Length: 155
Image 1 (cartoon, helix red, strand yellow):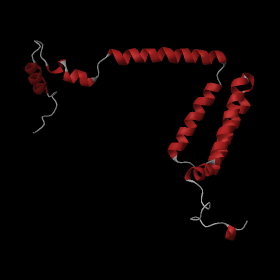
Image 2 (cartoon, rainbow, N blue to C red):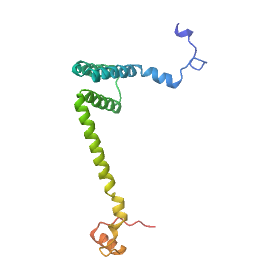
Image 3 (tube, rainbow, N blue to C red):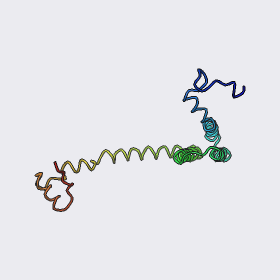
Image 4 (cartoon, rainbow, N blue to C red):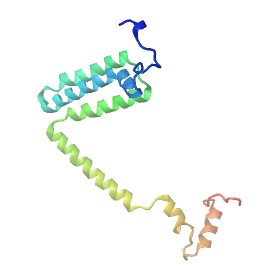
């Protein structure tokens, strides 16, 4: 079919939908994603043979980037994801379990830390402006004298 035989862009059936057009432009990235996923499955299943699949992933993303220059943010996100996933897949099964247990313990510790302490807004709005005797004005006056009071707003 020659270019002359194609329907003009505005004609019925002559243009692709925006979704299909966008996907058509992303075919190399989608193919690489499927390839990298298959390689990661191999890395997770065959722990003794992880070096070759690891290098396949990194070499293929290098080749893909050489042909398809991405924006800086997209590149950094892709590299961060590949680093995290290949690093995780490179761990032994025992190390993966240990990592999961440590992450769960740190998440519980962080949750206790966050929920146990009031935030700075609570400190400013609560007892921060009261004096040792519990009166409101004495704390405000002391804050003004020491320069720690928030700036006054004009009505």
